[in-house]
Structure formats: C-alpha cells, structure tokens
Image (cartoon, rainbow, N blue to C red; front, top):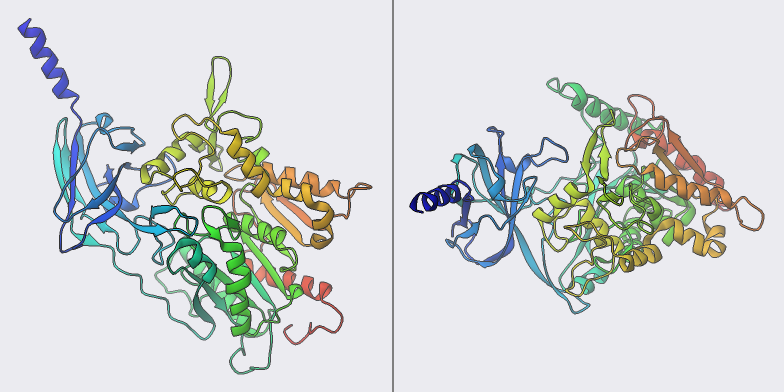
Length: 554
C-alpha cells in the first residue's frame, strides 16, 4: 500500500504544472491596474518573445489571464488554469529552457452612452497592438529552465514608451480632431485622425481646389508609400524595392505627371480593433457618420477639396476593401466611386469557408462520425496557414470578451449585436465553434453587403450605377474570392429584364493571385501611381457640366 501511495505522489509531482508569479514594480506604475496579462514562452532565445507571436506554425506559446485592480508589488499566479495557445495549458508545456516575457495589456474603464460599463484597451497611436502599445507594462526577456512544478517569478519593470508623432513635411500633413459623435458613444474623448498627401503647388497656389481619394486600410502611422529621399545604400531585397517604389512615387507626384489630388489615409482605431470598418455599429459606435459628417468635411475644408461627390473616390484592400465597398453602399450619395481590393467577406454565405446561414459550426465540417477542421487561410503552395479553431483560440488567449484586438473579434464587434454584458455577442461558441443562428441573422440584416444590395437595389441601384469596382485573386489567401463571386452573381443579374438598373461597375480576378491582389500593376509602380490616373479619368466622365475637370490634371 505504501509503495502504491509513493508512486501516486511521484506521478502527481511529474505532472504538476509550472507557474508564473507575475507582478509589476511601483517604478513602472504607481497605481492599481486592470488588464490582460500575457506570458510568452519562446523557444527562440534571441529577441523579445512579445514580437514572436505569428499566424502560422512558427508562433511561440502564450498564456493569458485577466487582472482587476492589481497593485504594485502584488503577484498574480499564472498557472494551470490560465488559457493557452497553441498548448492549451501550462500542464502541457514540456520541460526545457525557454525565453520568457510577460506583458500587461492595460484596460481603461468606459462608461458608454448605451449604459454599459466596459473595460477595454484604448489605442495609443500604435493601432491596437498589445505588444507595442504605449503605457503597457512588460518584463525584460529571461532565459529560464522550466520543469514540472517550477514557480517562476516575473517582474514587469518596463513601460512601453510613447510613440513620437510623425512630423509634417511639404507633402505629408497629419491632422486630428475630436469626434462629438464618438465621444458621446464611448463616454470619453475620442479622436479621429488622417494623413493627407498634398500635391505639388498646394501651398503656393491657394486658389486651387482638388479632387480627393480616400485610401482605406489598417491603422497607418504616416504615409509610408511616399518617400522624399532616395533609398539608402544599406537597404536590400524587398525593403529596397518598396523604398525605390515609394521614391519613384515621390518623383512622379512632384513632376506634374500625375493628377493633382488629395490622398487621405484615415486613422480610426477603436477599443476593439485598429480600424472601425467605417460604418455605424452597435459595439463600436457611429464611425460611419463620424467620418462622413465630421472628419471628411473637416479635411475637405482645410485642404481645399472640391467637395462634391463626383470628386470623391474611396479605395482600399482587405479590411480596407470591405470598408471601401461598405462606405459606398451605405453612403451612396457621398462618394462618387469605390475600388475595393481583396475585400473581407462581402457575402456571409461565404464567410471565408463558412456558410453562416446553413452550417452549424464555424470550426469544423461535420458528418455523422467525422469532423474536419476548417482552414482559415493557405500559403501560395496551398499548405494550410491556420484553422478557424486555432486562430480563434489565439484571440481568446490574448483577450476574452472580444478584447484581443484580433481579426475575428473585429468581425464580431463590427457585424454583431451587443451582448447582455455589454461586450460583443459572439457568432460562435469560442470553445466548440457552434454557430448561433440568431446572431447570424443579425449579421445578415445589417452587414452582409450582398444581402443589403439585394434587399434595397430598387433604391440603391440608381445611386450606385458605375460606382462599384472589385479586384481579387482567385487564390486569395483567406478564401475571400468565394464571397466576391456571390456578389458578382447578383450584380450581373441586374442586367436581366426587370432587375435593373445594371450596376455598370467591374469585377476583376487575378488568376492564382493571393491576398492583396489589386490588379496588374507594373513593376516599380505603387498602387497610387497606377490608380490615380484611373480615378482622374473616371471623375472627369461623371463630373457635372461646368465642373472644373482640367486645372488639376497633368
């Protein structure tokens, strides 16, 4: 009996989970803090583990745990109960030597206008990135030996410093305003920003007015695709090619060979994601109205835009591609045309590889006995990049209640209703992947763009004729081409008798091209260099009689 008991103790000790006791110093922060502690355990002994969390199989390990009112010097125990990714628990972590770091993603309390009180991370100019956000606490990386039962203290002594604001140049200007609409929704001052590229002669010709193109995408710190100096000699490979193209754009922009336009990149990070998707939503607030009624009019006034729908186009890729099409559809009288590249799902019958209306699970194709994981994406060689289940699991570790700042949580915050606790109502169960039909119905009624077009084409069609232009690769990395095909089917059906007016736009596919395909752009050119003349010619065709269509042309 005694020997059996000793064996039980030895086995139990062998399987005892390691534990991290995480704290922060009063020098790092003197007051209590709410947030999400993220412990990164890396097999890569070089660099900061916080920068080694990736989309595919090369990612390192993370464990996450919420803290409320954690005081300086107090330790929180990150142990077997903390959620983990890719390994589910610290019990699963093999003994070994690791590079370990802890980060505290700081939460702020919002007293929202709808009565809900939420604890969320506020963007501080980094674009909702937990591992680089100013004010977040972190430890220095440590190489440690971890075995069963190891208790490892981790002290966060560092604070991620503020980001130096980019400086204006002759051509690149940065603006920021407080949005009254968003401030009322979130219960604290909310800012909107933009980077404006102005043409040659902007300052010396104060009587000149310009068309405007709104470039939508993820949070931009500045206009990186425009370089006013030649590439340095130490740049090589892809970095040199990007720098060379950006410098060529500068040369074309200042030579008078391109149309004189304003190009605007929008900064609209939310407490959920690095951009708002540019529409009014239940969880993030009235960003569509805030942009079209507050920020864009401010920019047009300050930078002497023509200020008419025919002289406004919107374009962008991926998230920006969806936002481009959505803004044109939801604000059909405001914009004169939209070019959406590789847009996020525009039809939820093909939400990547999930049919939200007919299937029962977001993670698996289900049969009577077999379930097959649904891929999230693919590499160019067709190897699976990740699965829906694993990607969602990673976000759940980075932040519960939709607070990861990640892509799937952004979809829930944009497309979904508010849940009973004030956070986003999830379309699927984060553990099992089971779809919730009532939430799917909400998505369909509010943000399925194809469903919106079908439902309202009688009134929308006349306002959108010629305005919708979509470009995507047939091997989109995230399987977004399927939804575009479904939208195209409807748009082409408007040619049929009794279904009109015909949409009169375009859908272009790049054969075997991956995500971010934006057309056959010649080598060395940037997207802006290629599309600005296209935008200009389009504007000139739709301009009303008597409009100025010449003074801003080359």
